[in-house]
Length: 442
Image (cartoon, rainbow, N blue to C red):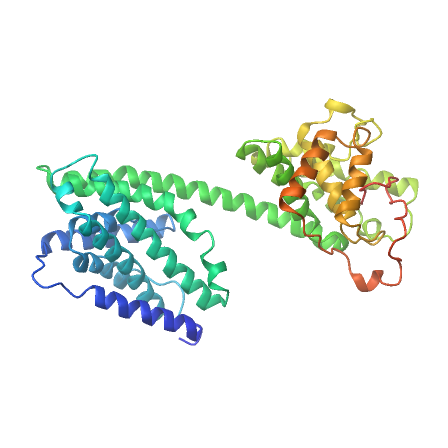
């Protein structure tokens, strides 16, 4: 119990007390105990399978209980699952109590709302589309209670403000809970039909398949994120002066892509491209990346190989798609004086033109070993000055518009204590070590 903060323990205790009060049966409220027992056992089985195989939660059975049972009985449906399911982390008691109280309160609120809108009669009579109204209200109540409880626990356990803890929880959870609610409604309607509970169980089969597909998608996405995170961390360790640069270039690339109206899939690809654009630095000697003085022509040629290194290193990562082209060509210039291939104009892939602007913008607004950060307004003016020669004017315009709408928070990426005696505010930046003066960095 000592690993759970005191405020979190109080939150668990309060939720458990409320759940116990909700489970008290109302006077003269008939309870179909056979239905309750079947739903409780079914939920315990589904919870075991879903948690073990998919790592998520499965609400259709709970919501079917909200549509079929009185509120007090519906609140007890999650109890067997909470008692039987294993708890991976100690201390087990508060976690088990929370696992029981949280869904109990949510399903009680859903059942209460459904009952208040006379949803039971609509379910018994298969009265569509009217049955959708009380069911939809019940789903909203269910989702709202889960949001309130999860936010309160996050605030108590992690000591964050409630407003921040609740931000976005409801909107993120509403869509999946609504899908589960629709499956729960169909289960309840079939349960009360002449076909009985056996037919109702058939609704859960496609829901189980969809949960599996959804879980596979999230596992694959998590694997992608882990791969990218590992590569970025390796670059940050090697070149400490640009720590955090990759994530910010990814963020700026997303801002440009969204301003241009690209679809979500391409926006995600541009984010990957921005984050990984400098991964080829892993093949460049560290002494060159951290050298304070000017580079020799030979050293510059070695530095300029990093786009090709990055392209080769990411060759086997299929999910990157056209991001690999951005990694290879983000140092090309519209006038053909860039590298590695000296492409001009539209020969440069669009994604590379996006990342080039994002990269230069962050390079200018971040402190480096060879230059101090410029104000955002100065950096934007420099980008606009070089538009049409070095940068695509369309991408520069998109970034400028996005910055006006959303702003930008410049962050220091170099060790300021090392720079304090080297640069004087207001002096123009010296020529960067790759031979350019605008937005260039190693």
